[in-house]
Length: 377
Image (cartoon, rainbow, N blue to C red):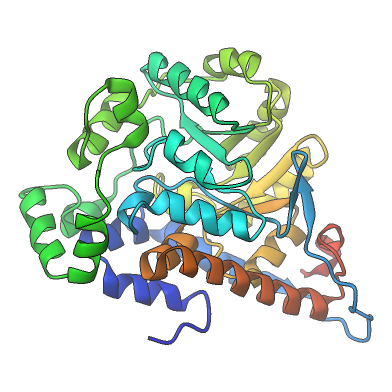
């Protein structure tokens, strides 16, 4: 199929992937109201159009945690990225590095830290959950430091898994899940050869290194479920804040008071996020939550935002509402599934082109010029 816009990659991914993988990345929690609002609410943000502003020197470059980014975009941590393309984390990291933006490796990646970091020429970011197994957390942090990770992303909105009903219907979980996944793989030969055969091992690379044994998809669901910790609080992060000497970002903030608590804790940044609508259905979209959070803490730390961002115009809207940068999750996974590293690189190029058009037509000559004055209330 012809790919001419970021949204085309979703359909391309749907065609190529076995249903259990497509619906795992595409779905949300409960009835998926927040999942839909995440996308719709960005679209509802109206921008002021300006003309005759001499936009010949437009720049999309920005500084974030002492890094120079060619675009105000970071690839978000996504579990099992290596199931969407052969050694998918490596391919996505290379695409990000080639476009001058950071890649964030998930705790539950297929490729381990030690495989991804040496594959790129810039430091990657690393994401960690607060888990019951503090030994795993300590081990992961030590290994991240050893390969040159500077920026740590803590996901805090998963003290318990969300109710994701699509997974049971698709074969990701539920009765006879393993057999259903096998049948689906057989009916998607391009994926089966590229990832199913050539993309092995299909284990949780970071977890396997710690446990000293291979892990599989069943372990992904079981190990994570057993290790989520509903008792977590700010004090459970303090030992990490004390030990980690690089930027530390708290991901999963939707309330201004939680943002203020992150400032008091000493975080360097937050990600305004509802986990892509995959945790608690019915909460605010990130687009709706962002302005109040920016009003509460802007200037005290860096503000990133994710959930529902599907194109370069959404990035412009997010920065105008108060974000310093955005994180892309589903958008880059669709592209990775469709065309691997080349797809992710092309997606970032499409985002850049769309941002340039939007900024030219709003009169914003730089990322720092994107603010509330561009928003039509």
